[in-house]
Image 1 (spheres, one colour):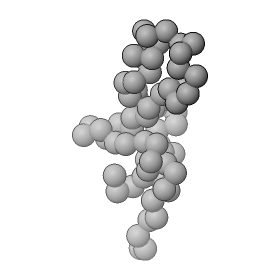
Image 2: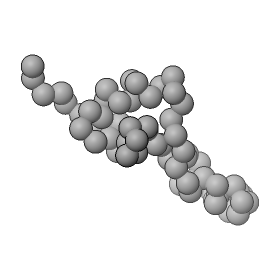
Image 3: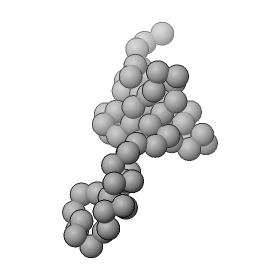
Length: 65
């Protein structure tokens, strides 16, 4: 069986937790930040788990992370 190639776009966007779940970061935190309130920006900083429906597909894309 040949080795699997990592999807480089996915490897930059997602990471696996120790338990095997997949984390992602939030969007909307790059520019035009003055119009967004502090509470919203603070909440966007933290990573969240990927939806369980999408997790198997992403796990296939990042097999060795």
